[in-house]
Length: 172
Image (cartoon, rainbow, N blue to C red; front, side, top):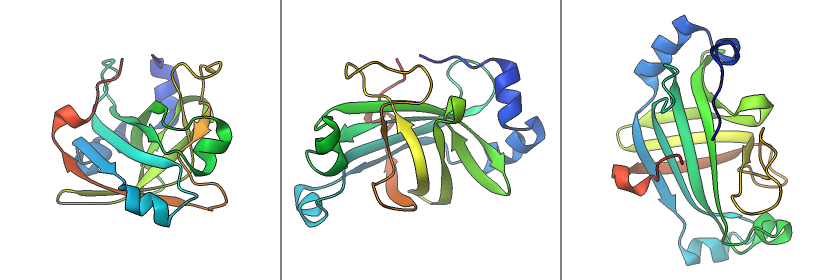
């Protein structure tokens, strides 16, 4: 579990911008499970399931946080990195930067931008967002062991839909 100091968080995002971000960030659980048919058609895709929970920082720092969890597929980079069918997780802190809502991993572990949030749909884009893989290798304490972005892509987009809160596991 990561705890960021107030100084670290203040360096990431200005407080006045967070108020704007809180109003624009859709809070709740968003999920996507890729079907076996979809994965067969996209053999390089390494993400089989993705959950993003957006809401108040669970550590009481007063920020909006994103808790990203999911499962790797048994293909693409997941297979070559040895993470096939492993679960992953990562925490990020969200705010406004450059007129965009961005969720940033501590220690420059990457970020994702919320491209759109309409109704029950959430679309994010990333070129680098590190993932921790519990029980697989030495966790770095900053960043992670794999990446949410697809190999060879300048940017990867994920489209998720609102799901019941129970579909997004809590941060442990």
